Length: 316
Image 1 (cartoon, rainbow, N blue to C red):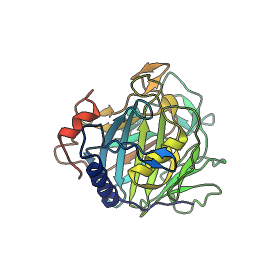
Image 2: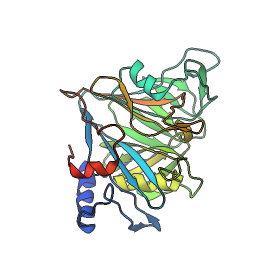
Image 3: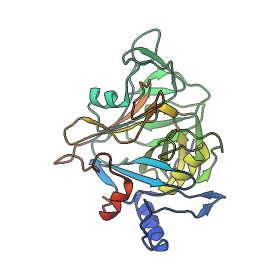
Image 4: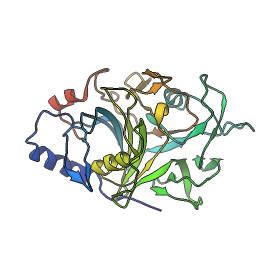
């Protein structure tokens, strides 16, 4: 079992230090190219946008080591009114869950944010068909899909989050989603220098207070070409995580938030069937339910680039 330690204060302090080193240059998202274990660090968001109580959204882009666009949620696990939801059971013998887009999942369950989560199959074009998840899924304390050799992000009813390798102890687990592998363990990157793909990752700060969810777009030349699992771990480490997991990725990688009109807004650029902007029907999701902000979330303008965030600063 792994946990994490560097929270918001550590991340903010690190961001200010990096900004000083770079003399607040105009590069996107506080771009770093400092070597950490032989790997480049990745950009931090230059602004965090409030989504709901305890949850903020950030984004970053870089041209090094290749064109990349990334999207992040930082979740304060001590926020009042916060809870999590993994995709519930379909109640069908031929599948664990019903396939749906991540935006549909957010809207159907009236959530404030959501990402895709565990690997699954088959991939359907239509929503509402039975899907089998791979690895442990727990939703509202009930096991939806059984454990395999895959690790999982597990969360208790009190919002204590851990990244765990099997065998699992499920006595206090209220929410769980499996991932392909642990990529960051006790502050050390353990992911592989494997193929470039769109990726979805999750990480926990060393003090256990903050959960970070990350989606990096890929398969889109000159816009965002994807990252390795080692780079998933390195980016989570740069964010301030101590432990991290690589969730399902590829064409499934999607990050959605509820906008001011209480409708889902896809924040990244998913790619399915080779078409940028097309969402894939997924079998597993991780959703966040939290108290709405008075006046609704504050989000960047649609289609704007991360460098636009540099003209406005906010770190709630």
